[in-house]
Length: 546
Image 1: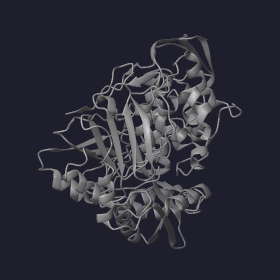
Image 2: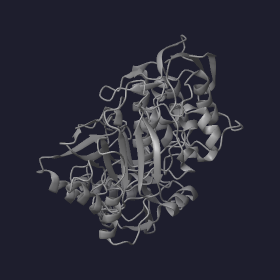
Image 3: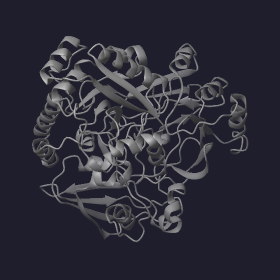
């Protein structure tokens, strides 16, 4: 998913950019959040008023404050982190990933088996499960959930599904054998197939609800998950209720209140006043001030993601590998600590730490301007190089990071102009190729390097506003990725990943710079731990309310 972390960088995103993940707005601006010119005091009064009448006094409510809001509550549409946060808790998938080991465990499927070459998968489904609307979960609902995304002419398909083709393009058909047995047919073996079934697009929706609400299903979600949808007040709050019939048992608390506020200082104030149990958006300075507060816990979890500087390979200068290598040599990894103060993890590879296949390229090095000048001489540049660095939003830290990079380039005689535009315009410019360099990123939808590599070379995702590497059209790279897709042996897959990393590094197709962390602060007198998986999944069902 596109990584849209509200982190210091307010990227477009994931994974939505899809974001980035629920995270830090640092000194305070978040993309995809409408800015309103309202006095802070009035905003705080409005948010505080939201807490009135949210349920009986005896009920247990978890209140969560955030800058971000979901784009959709349809799991098939969700490709930003905030949307996935909600779909994870409203719906179930056939399998889930263990929050610590990432091992595949049963969920709506209780068992499964595959034929010898892994092209036919049979799943036995859990019995006695019902959707929030009372309808029964069965094999037909699994088939429906996949068909509406697979088939362009499916009668109950009301919009596009941006990630399905990327993750599940190897599915030929899904069929019901009996009420509680479903079979998937693949066009070729795919090693991480089982893990992909834990991703948001694989969540099972209520066919009755989709047929009833049509396009409005995205704001009227119905799944089998531990929480059901109750209310969505635009730009204010989203309320979920505990599902009393959940097949694992009723959650520990009765209600989840997601409060949306585009001022991080307001969220911080509400948290300090203990009117919010959790906040996922805050400035570095505010977080530092909470380190000595006994009842506040700051949690940082590295997620399987990569943030990188992307090149527009249609630019005449950037088509030259020697110039790209010079730009790479001018990158100073030390600026990350200066700007982000330890809230991101430096990364020199497109494959993040903690994911199979992660290696640090042999050529990875610190800032080396002498080497950069050597590459420029080799490129035989006769005219001054002027480049535009496109940014989305108005994040001070994002701008600060790129400004420091621009100073290094200036010492090489390269002029780098920073262009800040609103998110909507940013995405349009990426689609049209109207940029030279930009920051973007991707977070894995499942814990396999394929979940990073394939999207980065996917032309369709670029057309949706993701600045990836798809402009590099090379038969060797294409064959490497195809070979990885088909490879079923784990050790050989790791070697193929290493070959792809080596090729990307040798050609400097991008500059990997850091790995995101999910950052949250919670009141430990009210909340008993919050688990975040490396795939940035937060399951509310596992939260205990004190």
